[in-house]
Image 1 (tube, helix red, strand yellow):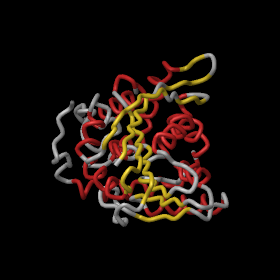
Image 2: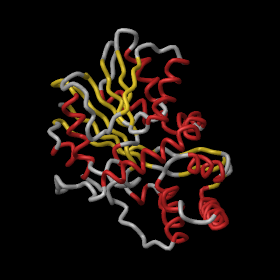
Image 3: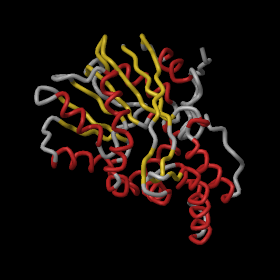
Image 4: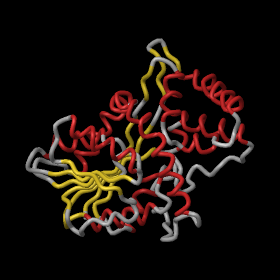
Amino acid sequence: MTAVSTNTFTPDGQDFKIAVRAQWDRSAAGWNEHAPEIRAWLRQASDAMLDMAGVKPGASVLDVAAGAGDQTLDIAARVGPTGRVLATDLSPAILALADVNARHAGFGNVQTLVADGEALGVPPSSFDAVVCRLGLMFFPDPLQGLRSMQRALRPGGGICTLVFSRPERNPCLGILMSTALKHAGQAPRDPFQPGGLLSLGKPGLADALFQAAGFRNVASTALDAPFHLPTPRHYLDFIRASASPIQQILGRLTAEATDAVWAEMEERLGVFTTADGWIGPNELLLTAAQR
């Protein structure tokens, strides 16, 4: 078992959250515009996440770090009119889009709440299931986040989170990070540094955090989730529209320097071009448990 410190947060965790909130507020519209690509990429993983969390008709479900709510709509359809979904996110701007998307889809069983995932502030033992899709790895203190989710669950309730797995199984992210850091004049980073894209990919870490948070029947499953797009430029258009750590690294470069970074990324990512288009390897990690 991987040892877990209860002091996993960064010293400037609050400043980190403020910066992340601002970045997602700025990127909300761009992320929402790429919903079709995101949905195609994460379709299988999202279905598996809902299955493993035990999302069923009539259930009350907490969707943490919901973003623009693509998976929120799937949850709302599963639980039906007798169930309910509470979608939370740190960013008011992106959560407002989740609310709009739910209304446009005709779901009246979706509510939204701007909330820090490490301090959700929802009534204890009030949900049958909790999910968090590609959000937990961005928490400065993921253990605190899991404890907050555990409190929100009813006894016996299920949880499933989805994060990126090991660095070697996510080479596209490695290319993006190494290229950005090189051009920004920054040293390579520990890929498992809290708050990063791959921070929970260390083998055994997610399971250990879940157990430390008080969950039982913890199990993780790796799932291939390649990104199918016409060209690497389409992938970079998606990255540029998101509030990824890549944007944070490039934030202080000039426009000309930034263009050079994107050009090099596109060239390096070209290695994944096939006769059927660009297929970027990704591996995701689903961790499921019960309270």
